Image 1 (tube, rainbow, N blue to C red):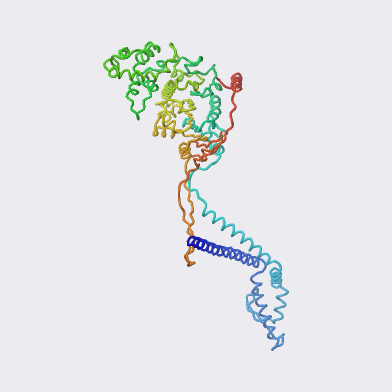
Image 2 (image 1 turned 60 degrees about the vertical axis):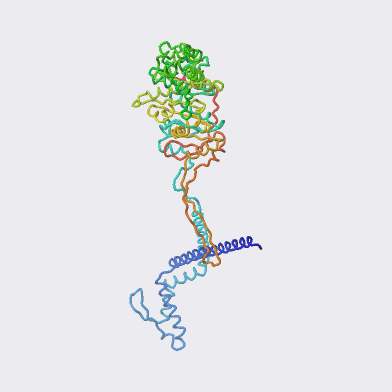
Length: 581
């Protein structure tokens, strides 16, 4: 036997001996508890069967029997007497021994002693064994439970997976907006909803469940539809508006319809900019300023054709001449044609989508927003093949709508205005969105955003601003994700719990005094939901973290089979005057 095998044998034998010894001690404890319970039970039964006074006279009876057995050899039986203290008369008395025995056996004390003997002979042993067995079983169960509870991870605090619907309704905090039977927290719609999940997991299906509820509650909504699915299902031409210059039924919009102050021109220009502070691109930064000035140049006649011609089709000298005596004349001039050409080239690529706007358009997003007679929704659409072209224009429209929202009086009872952003990273950067998420609650803003993975959003807004934005979505629905980083951050979002975990250490040695078990409690944090669990969720199943101090839950939604039947059903409701629009 080599040294390693010898060490394994020694270790195994010592551990076995230690466990055997401790098992023996435990068995002894169980036996003693069972025996103690049996003795206690027998004593209680004896007390039930016989009085102490009967035992007192029984002891005297035994003494009398002994005295007669010995005395009959020396005296006549009639001469043998007994002196004792009478409990009945409370005095010392002297009786003939045989008279005492006759009185004892014919009285109640003798009868009680007879009952006691019958109990001891017939049933005491059986009862004792039964109580002993019960005591042993209870001891084994108790000690086993104690051992399990000592080793088990004990939670200090943290969220649990629970069904929330009854909890919310019991606390009267259930919203009218529900998903799969689970209501949101009351008034948390304005704290925004984030839906995370890879393609085909159920994000769009969840919005298909949300939009009919928004209709039912007569709220208004701005829906950014980058696939066309929501427009096909929910667009009502009698009350809704559509914005897409590539569609025939679109409202005709021009930038000047929503620009009234210098800041408005700058906001729209920033939507058509690809400038990122991290890269600090000179041409991209100044192209934004030039577009703002170009919009101001044509604000009176609102001529989109002239604007496009000046920026895209004019030569370098004409381009520089157009901005003479403006705020950007220092960077756009005939003396710096190369700089002007770089800015013009950058700006020309950024405003490609403006070429699709038709002259004479009169639709204003701000007017639609503030018009109390408007009851429908605004659909901002772009099919997948149109998305790259219209993305800057969509960002501009969202920015204008957000600004209109923030112009509401915060002291009024503003109705909810929903912003449905199905694929948030598919849009260009909306500079006003972070502020809107933080401050729109008092203006009635309810933002619902869809996200496939965090990297997409970080590429647009940067890691810090992305984290800040995601934190402002108080209600989170997390479907399956395929990215590990997104899964881990989603798991962190769902929360952690602190647990006490017991660690058991065995010690052994040549002397049995060294043998023993050491148990230490270790406090540590653990993710409530592991990233791998999020990455393996089935379709239509998500983890939900609602706003406020509520536990998370796992929710499975039903597939929303919405088709033209929805439209016909909605029209029927209108005819029955169950809805107003």
